[in-house]
Length: 163
Ligand SMILES: [Cu+2]
Image (cartoon, rainbow, N blue to C red):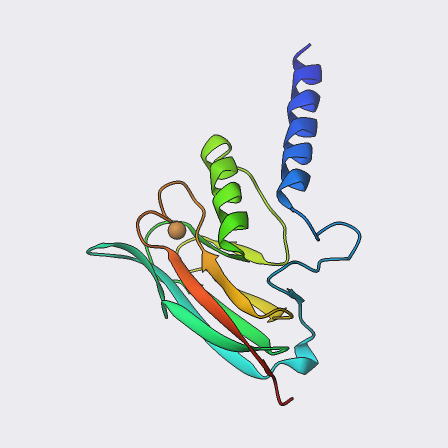
């Protein structure tokens, strides 16, 4: 009975996380509104992102980013804080939904190409191509962290990248 319950829980979590992927995720590889995983060879810029706690709450540095549509960015992400943090790229709506799931399942693991979760002193990297113009964000969706200040706008402008 116990084993059955575990299996059922696992299935539920899998269903829950595929529901999170949202429109546009299925059927088109990993393409999302915010873009898609990039090729290392196409990187035009490296952006260092630090995650930390501050006197006022928690933060990303820098606290915002502007890119051109078509640009491929290498994010070098470092957790210089004392708590676990994550970096999730998406639309504000996707992140809000995802945040709700994280409240219910704080230990939820995700292995999505648009996110990285780091322990203190941890470092990670995401190479991402921004395929659509608009305002997106990167955020930490661990319970309470978004509210403490861990979200930053990514503005993708319509001009085409020169590379
Ligand atoms: Cu955080």
